[in-house]
Image 1 (cartoon, rainbow, N blue to C red):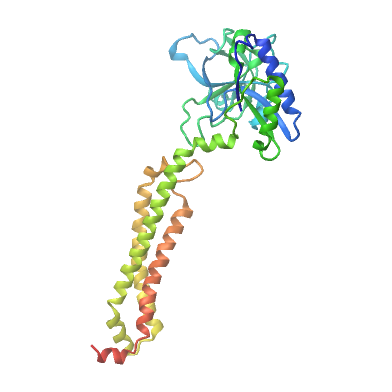
Image 2 (image 1 turned 45 degrees about the vertical axis):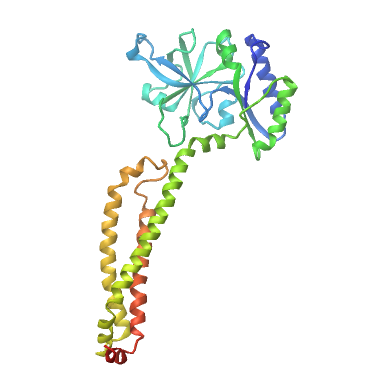
Length: 353
């Protein structure tokens, strides 16, 4: 849930820190709450962006890099289950009296500190007036802009909001998101968390109460709608293809009814006649399936932008499943009329011709 503290009542960094510290303490005492933290910036929900430079680089545009900047309290990484790869995360000991520190993501570490230990290294950061910050931890990269959307800013850095200069701290922490990890359905504890907010400040409203899963769902909603629409049309196309294939194959075999009757009149066994028709139909089906697979593979580039990272445009299960379905329908369309033709009295049928 999000909270926005009125500056008329919380006009100093000490008052803002006191509110968040007391609120987090009260929420942590709620049964079934595993961890709680506050942050300015949240994956899938938005965050600031900060410029940074490598140590010693002149502050010119050509040297400037950008990163998503989160301002977080102690327990943030544990609450969101962002894995720690090296160093440490922030604690309540990180205050304005300690040097400015950064936690960076693995993508930034791999790019600018390849083959090195980034812990203890420094960056020229552009979010505060301190200028230089020490890297104290490396955490996993987060898909900030969505699970399958383009990552506009490739790198991420985290500030301990308590370590920011007093003026910056008051501005940043006046509006933050409270994140609560619980056992069971988190929305089931929303009322108790609201009561904790009221206990700290009866006049403080909360808004945007939802689960992180809902943030994720919202981030992929447009693509999910597009995929659902395409799936519906694809299913309709598959149905039409199956009906058309069955009708074509069945009509082709029906036109050969007289030929099949002659074969049987000359002594051919019913099973041999059926196998002849099915075998010839199978040759056509295999040829058609091969051409269809080639065409489908050629169009994979069109579909790539509509698929999530977990789904390959050349997904074997999809290709095999659709091919087997159409081949099975085609064989059925060849078998049923051929089987029906073998049940006709060939002598009587010839006398009627």
